[in-house]
Image (cartoon, rainbow, N blue to C red; front, top):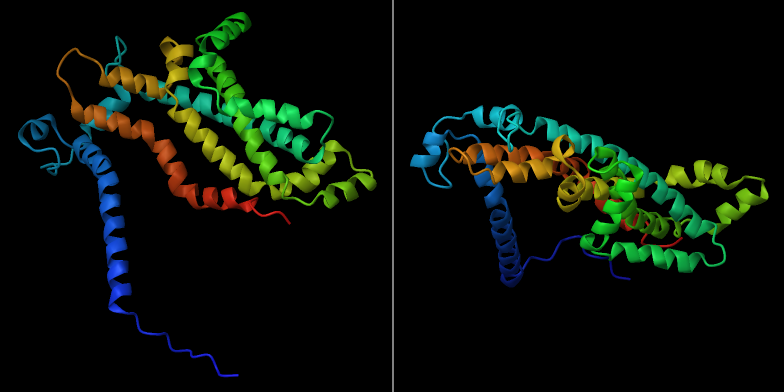
Length: 295
């Protein structure tokens, strides 16, 4: 048998040209999508004089943090001139419990639908999946009546409940599809040894669930933090999330339009989800493919 050559064959001009073409397209696409963010960043560090005398993509003559300070603590949002700080904290108070609760319920539901099937479970699961395709607008009126009946309308607790209910279909789907890749023999053996529902979940299922938990947390955090419709409909006054406050700040029509403050506020509002993807993006991709192959 002839020995396999260890010397890599030289690349032909056609292959090199193809690679150059592909990388050029990727660089152009990256610049195209990053240009708006670049404009936002440099504008947020400009003074109003720089904005009036410069161009859209011109660099600031001097870096100023005044717009950031004003956006955070003193910008006027309606009649409230305390910046977006309070609304930013509202989003944190809404996102953390909503993500934790919806993830926990989704894990238990996925465990039930994959390892503890019962008569009619597939029908119930299919009905639950319908929630993934229901437009937001369809549930506005019934949800508003429900929140009013529970006495939590126009509150952060009401927003938490809304996002938990709406996100439950997605989290259940994620966990169920991941858990079906876990061999059923493990659960059967544990049941033969006398382990019950929750013992199997805690000792066998949950320890291998880290990839899908990361996926679910990133998905829910992004969806809930960036939501505007539920925030503007089901909140009011001091309970509004940061997305609603940002809209009100940008659309304020009194006084001089401060574009640097608007850009700084927009970056602050987007920072949490941006950091989540930067720090955990690779785990998100790993989690999406972790349950793609059974066995």
